Image (cartoon, rainbow, N blue to C red):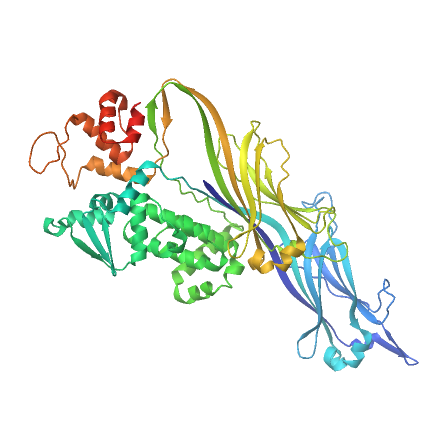
Length: 627
């Protein structure tokens, strides 16, 4: 299974601009009892400082708005213009300068407070656009509230302007392989039944029984503990007392040692990562890293980075550092960041180095995808047959879009741009041989469905063969539950129109913003399974069996070492030996190899005797391999 996360970042720049007009009374004329305002002024032009200095802004004050019949108001407008006319030789010639903006207009009174505050949202098209606020302040208010609004005959007009930039995508990928079937199940039964246990461990108030050989095979710490101890200290039935670990965590540790997996790892991952580091279980550290990556968010990013550094998980640290850099404004507001500044300067130094790198190159550096791929080994079977093989490829894709409300909340004037807004996620794949590639597409501001938000799954790969797919689309809410869930099944070709989507409305998303868009971030997910059918004919050998995990390699290493052997099995009638009749030594060596590694080298050299032995010892899988 592939786990892919895509982040769509919408950068924004906020600027506050104040325009002060002194001697306001000089712009007011009184004739025969009639008061006439001559406040027709333009502010100096200013820029937002976003790096795009081609666009300038200014405020315009008008005593009367020609478009309004009510002449009792003073109007204020915001203008967006190009700094200079572009000629054909300019690098920006032919470029559109469309700007999406949110802004607040206000007056600063004699107490330095904002009054007459009004909010606006608008698209300013191609660097030559404006919007008029016809009812900025009543003329009579300037007279009646002169002491408040015009202290020392000074009018101070302010604007807080937010500019939204173009979205950028950033993605990470993790490959998760399924565990093997037989070896893991066999050792799990051994753990559950407690049969043949030769070591007892006391953890807190609880006692655990286990098998010394399995502990040694899986953990370098246990290997050293048992091999360096004296014979008197390692008698069967001994009890070891383990400190600095809780019983619940040790239970999960044992589960991993026996099965290469941990139930409900997300609930114990922090303490389990510490235990994996202490007991030298690198593969368990990788498993914990995957769990932490799946739970990574703004609120816990500093905590996860601290865990990665404390327990030496460099790939996790690298990924989390990149995530923090891309979400730096939000992360800096979290309690964890404030604690880090005071108590953990080493983490602050890591982030400082990352920011220094970004400043040097002038852009964000996107880390290589984080890949945790378990080792693969396949057994082989001599056979002649035709085979229709259905391979199942599963991918979980997560797409996060920040600043989502900037796309959903209504804009004044033309309300929406001429064209609909379409956001695309990064491209992802199940990793199948057909070359499938997919991406999410979100459409807002569609003139046909102005209140509808459409989230689709699109195919961008080129493949002609029909493949069966099953997928679930949903929005991940603030409690990590699947909202707006839809499920589909289809036999699909890349040229087919893919018309399956989540449809929701602006009002639903905005009214449930805390639930569906926590931190103003919308998270769209897809669980996609592709079934790939291959028809093949094998005349020599074919590969069978599931991909084997690291656990089988551990037992294989122990089998080769032949160290710490507890039982000797041999033909004969010697004291303290188990007698296995009717099996020759070479065949029994193959039996042991299968028990430890789930495979047999040179199976074709001795299939008949091995089949008889497998039948005698009730090794069903080995019998099937010998057929």
